[in-house]
Image 1 (cartoon, rainbow, N blue to C red):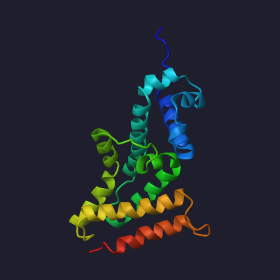
Image 2 (cartoon, rainbow, N blue to C red):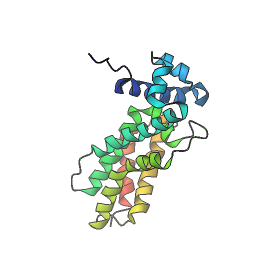
Image 3 (tube, one colour):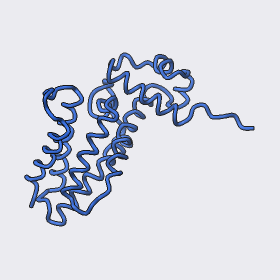
Image 4 (tube, helix red, strand yellow):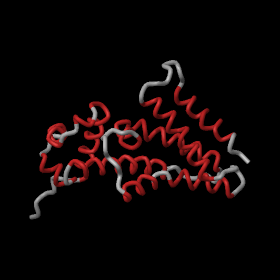
Length: 195
């Protein structure tokens, strides 16, 4: 009878989530493989077996963060109406950030000083935004948006990223109805891009 696999996907995800939590709440100095293993109720051997070491763990955390964002954005079903599709993508972006706030600083901050994603990890990260680029490109090609598509993509990304970053850091006014203000900002941004 084969031996059961103890270092499975569930443990990998648990370790990545805990690593993200440590980084986002306590900083890079708190991320030691020994502490991570103890917090996840496993051994350092398991951490090394799954990731190979701290630099590989941080890289995998970066890739995982963008993978989760990409899955949410790819799950948005195109309606054929680029304006609404773009709003739905913006809402999915915020949902992803709120679901995994501990990963947001890994994606866009300097949570681990000196970490630079390699070319493959960077390409995987950018692929998460493919639905945004595609929706905008379709909108430009069909005459809904003025474009250029790359400029519009970066502007739309900057708006959602800025709003979400302010929300996650608690910098928004407490009386602000965040969800409705966010959607209003998405819709108002589109007005400037309409053909």
